[in-house]
Length: 405
Image (tube, rainbow, N blue to C red; front, side, top):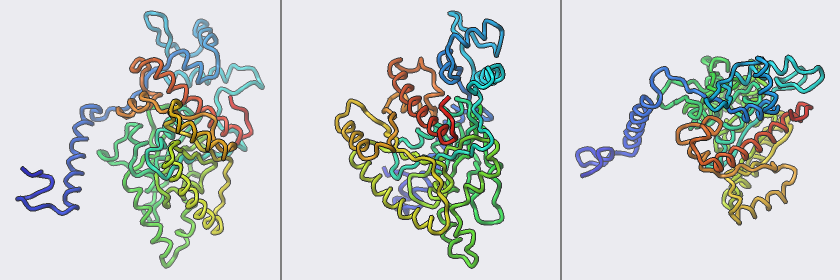
């Protein structure tokens, strides 16, 4: 018997009909799964954080937090029958504000918001090749910075919308407005504030993605060749201009770029304060990155000559999905470090089943409970993530003229 999705009355269907029917089938099945996992009007929650995690994110000792609790200061944690304390993310913010208000004058700031003279810092996470850990990197970085007390806006520029899905928004099932509404060239353009949505992490908002973003790749060449090409010629300023509306509400913007060198990526890069290039340490991936850099450099040179100002504070290569016991991978990392000693992040993102298993349920490692995994596996992955994100946070603070808190 033939496949009903491929044949009608034994006559083969044209390719466009096949993919339309299969797209509808996937959408219907996903809708069923969504109803089971995310009932109507349900919101994605967030676990509580252990005393050790709270101490890490606040940058204090566990004894400091215990002392506050014993003295009746700050929020009341949840206490297990064995006496273990845990705090919600909102309570962490409350503790942060308390420490900031009652700290000694001139000492460190526990609420690390931007001060006058510190510009909004925009980090674009890019790679020409899919599967490099780009979205995983962007998601964990944005969440880590928010848990560290920064006001963060995540922008999903990838029409595949993986970053969006990780934050509980499903554009394939729901009506989702993307940054395209802010980038478009017609009279229906909206301000970026109209498409920003909150997430389950306090201090972290997101601009979701949808397939509509692909329209920007088609609209921009038309604008460049229109009878009034003024807007098209300055397409690379559209994200930076959009962010001006909300820049006083955020400290850091993290942009997850699409895995292709198109107008979306170029517009993000020219709005960026810094660029993070993810690379999987294997020969084919490094060769692909080489081609990406050659094309990117040539195009950005042309854009700079057209009047774009790229004022990068820093750019770095991040090794992702790294297996330290893999000899060829270690050799490739050494090869990259020898060539670019100033641009390679010291920390690497290790390959971990904990991260990939969390992703199956559309979660990040900061969302899942430690008890769901083998303790050593979880701790190794979390240690790697925090090391990478702390190093990136340090670069942002240096760009502001600060020391890492």
